[in-house]
Image 1: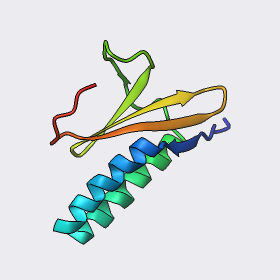
Image 2: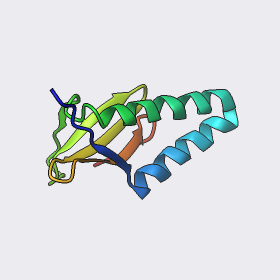
Image 3: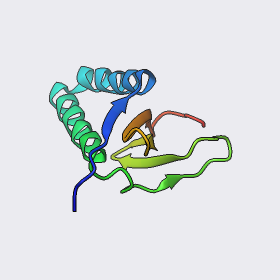
Image 4: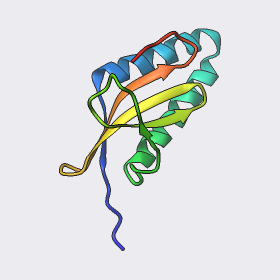
Length: 101
């Protein structure tokens, strides 16, 4: 069996969300910020091998089918493009904030 490898892309908005979380955490604990960044990148890389591992995220306000990766206090939403073999990470929410979809 040949493993299909998907390219993982973090869009600009999700990247900015991640940087905002890491910057805030770094002000409190630099080592914790480094660990969180590394831990998230490991999970993102794993999506390249197993993009269907996480469940579909259901929301009446979204037209696109997103999958959700829940990690620590973060909700990460991503899409899978089967034709291009690309996983697109679109949103990274910190559950401590009041965010709405």
